[in-house]
Amino acid sequence: MPEMRITRRRMCRILAAGPAAAAMAGRAFAAEGPFRLRYCLASCMYGTLKLQEILPEVRKTGAETVDLWPPRHGDQRVQIDDLGHDRFAEMLREQSVRLGVITRFDLGPFKLQDEMRVLRKLGGAVLVTGSQYGKTPEGDALKQAVRKFVEEMKPHAAAAEEQGVVIAVENHSSALLCSPDSLRWFAEMARSPALGVALAPYHLPQDPQLLAGLIEDLGPKLSLFYAWQHGHGCMTKLPKPEELLQMPGRGTLDFVPLLAALKKINFQGFTEIFMHPWPRGIPILDTLGEVTAEIHRARQYLEQCLAKV
Image (cartoon, rainbow, N blue to C red):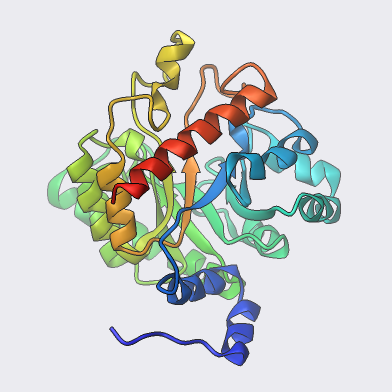
């Protein structure tokens, strides 16, 4: 592939087109330096703690951006409405942090257009949501259901393109996008650059080679990668050491093949170190400092894995 060069004038046009376009520009520059993960901090890891407490922790975890979650997992998306968006933007500047993602599973995939404008206004790039829930079809019926979903998403993808943001659909159990095949079909059929995948290994077979192959198959459609494994699950109360097995470096999933695949596709989307506590809406550990330290530990593990690639 010929070397890609971007002039200052072209870069200005790309940046003016919005954060999603700027992310595409990042792909061109990635070859000039070593591959690295772009960490984004999920606000819900701190439960419903205030953004005034969370934002100073972002860079301590190794992240540069934050993902705002709504209830029931967190309430920071609600907090910014209470604070006022201008005040929130000021808080981001004070901490040298950017908004990367807003997660809105609560809205579903077809009610995101107002949220796209909020995301764009605040300089964010990715809007995460889910697909339809219910009885998941199988075989050709599943493929046709994915095709229908992509068709239904076209006007929403067009609106996201206009705003310069990306809608990333997460795979989830009991949802339309729940299996490797459904994700591959979605990536193949969703032609809009504003429609991507938020990949959650937790909800997939814990086979590192299968997950690595899926990452390669998704390629440029991968917008967000959750560094998250199944461990002993998150659907019932567990002793804290067992609950923490969802975190990178604690459970049995080997992340080295996954990071090798991310490097192979030159992944320029966001990486979120992630887990769910039980019950939802509480911090993953008892104190602010403990949460930050655990995320930092997981990041160190991922960096050690990356060094082996």
